[in-house]
Structures are given as C-alpha cells and as structure tokens.
Image (tube, rainbow, N blue to C red; front, side, top):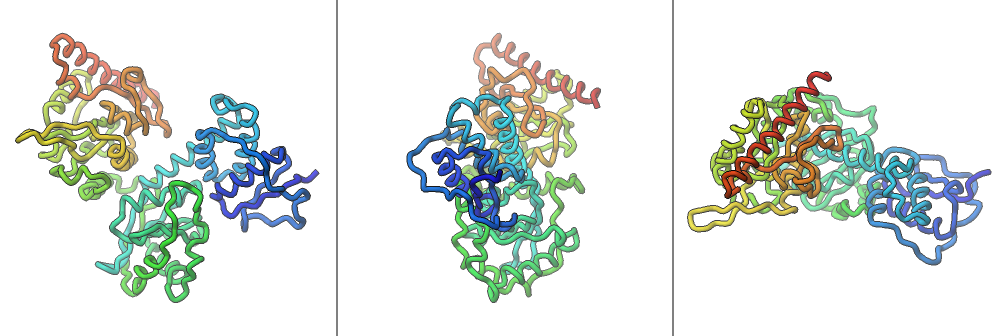
Length: 471
C-alpha cells in the first residue's frame, strides 16, 4: 500500500517547509508511515498526485524549544531519512513530552547524533577553510574550496562574514557556493565534484565558475538566490545581489595564478598553521576589546603539543609582552607544571580571550572578567588553534576557559578532577586559573589550593602516560 501523502520540499535545508508540512500532517492525524518526503529536483516526482490532499490544519500544538533547535540542526544532515525521522519523533512527542530526555531512545539518539555531526562539520569548516587571493589590490577576490560532509554552508557562512568582513570572498563547495560582498551573503549553485580544484586548479575553477554564474553580463538576480535557506535563523538573507555583481565586475582580467586552497583537514605544512593564525589574529576586530588593549596575545608552544592549556585572558604583563602567562600567574603555573612532571616547553598555552580587558585606575589597569559575547567572539581562535594543534588533552583553567572549551557555562567545582570527553573525542580537564591561587588571602588555604591545582595537573600527566601506553 502506497503512502497517502507525498511532501516535496524546496531544498535540502528547507526547515521551514518541513515544519509547515509536519504541523499540518500532525494536526490531520497522519501517521508517519503514511508520508513520503522528497526534495525538489533530487528525486523523481510522483506520477500521480497525492491520494489524499493535505487539508489546511485546524487547531494547534506546541513542542519544546529543545526539539526545534535539534531539528534545525539535524535537518542539515545528509541522511536521506532525516525528514521522515524528524516527523516520527515529532509525532511521538505529542504523546510523550519528556521523550527527548530519554537518551537511549533510538529516534532521540539518532537525531541527537545527526545534530552533533552537523555541529562538528560546521566547526571543521570554520577551522579548515583557507582563502587564497586571486587578483591584486582593489580588484582582488579571496577564494576557498571546501567539501562539507553535510549541508552546512549556509549555516557556517555568517561566521566567515563576521571574521572576514573587510574582504570579498567566495567559498566553493559541491553543494552550494557562498559569497560575501561586504554587505550580505549570497548563495549560488555548487561545483560538481568532478570539477573540484586541485592545488594547481583553484584559479582555473574560479575563472570558469565566475564566467558561468557571476558574470554580470549573464547574471540573473533570482539565480543568485537559488538554494538560499531563508528559514534558518542564523543565516543572513541573501538579499543584496547588486553589490556582489558590482564588486565582481572586471575581476577576470585581474586574476593571477596563485596556490590552491589546502584541502580540508590536511595537515601538510602543519608547522605553519599556528603562525598563520597568529598573523590573522593580530588584526582581529570581532569584539570591542581590541580598542583598548595593546595587542593580541595569541597562544604559544609547539605545534605537536600533547597538552593544550587554556587560560582566561591575558593580564597586564601579557598585554605588554604579547605572550601568554609571563606574569605572576605564569610564574606560578611554571612551578606547578614542574611539580606535576610536565615540561612547560612541550605544552601549548593560550587564552580563551586574546585581548586584555581592564578598567583604568590611575596608572593601574584592573583586570575585568570577559562577558559571554566576548568569549563567544573569541572562541573561533580557540577552535582554530585546537584544530591546528590537535592535542590529546585540553586543560581549561578558570570559568572563562571552561566556557570557551565546552561552549557553555561549566562550573569548576563539580567538574574538576576527572576527564570529560569533548564532542570530537578529545579529552578535557577543568581546574582553577593560577591567578585565583594568587588571590587566596589565607596562607594555609593558599597552600591547600595550590596543591590541589598541582594534583589536577598530575591527573593530566597521568592521562597522557595512560594514552601513550595504550597506543
């Protein structure tokens, strides 16, 4: 027996279309097994219309914000069954509002895993994309090639628009291509994988793609909006087409040969990665802290470090020196690492926030705790550092560091003393920041807290030894 309803969505990321159809189906009491889901242009259209036309729904029902957030991410997964799976979960949630709390439920577990995979792929894209300049001076354009595992390009594009707001760029992928003209993100058709650029073909691919899609003489305004997911809340509207076409004029004549974008996740010439990141971070304007700070204080240490220590933010001494942990807290950290049996020269040390936040009091600059927007704005650098270093263990020192490492507020008290797995399997530890130990007024309490801090670092050393034996 054929399903009674056939739903055709506009595109692979049509969350709004899925939500509208799912709501109507549920209110009409249509069982999940009675529905087939298609994406326009990717599967053959049915020869016959739906046996039971979908009537306009009457009534209403609500689901938790947690499900909506989960569905918005999972729908970007490449699993062809995601639309049906999400509708089945929605159907079941109407009768069991606490279902999402049952992590062992097969549907809940599968959707959660899909959402996590989408978030990991988004982070991979943010950490791996490398732009190469094509053209020179005012006619230059920056181009990158990336192959996503899932439909994340439109979700990730705003990150690059914020990070590289002052340069025109294009990210070419097999699914869709994202373009930034300094005003808005626009989405165009993707590039077939058979035409994927090698290290010597990025400019050639860009020339051909530009001529067929972005050439103003051939450009159709609505073509640039094809595939734009106007529904996903974090995706900016691709409404400003004209500035993109204007900035593209004259570009082909100015193109010159250049190296291709490095394929994603390739660790070739990895020794240069941190230096490249350090140079990029020197001009970071993602939050207002750069205005008063002396300079960006980036991480420091060997590229192949097994341990990545993440502090909170640079202090006064670090701000002036441009190096992390060189002040009193750094000296205390050096002593504690030595007592724990960890060689500081083999550790990569960085901060969650790269600029010194302070309040001036005469000639003194008093440290201020970074707020959540500042931590989030700077988290891109931690993520890209971690991707380049690929440490076996991350140690978050202090509440700000823990919030950056775990992506949410993470209390130190109940989380320290044991390893916690991050989404990609990397292990992490939580402990206090060395500056906290300097502020403990009572001498006996200070000694106890210091030994506890050393104990946390000894746990880190033991985890590495255990990992080495297992390998």
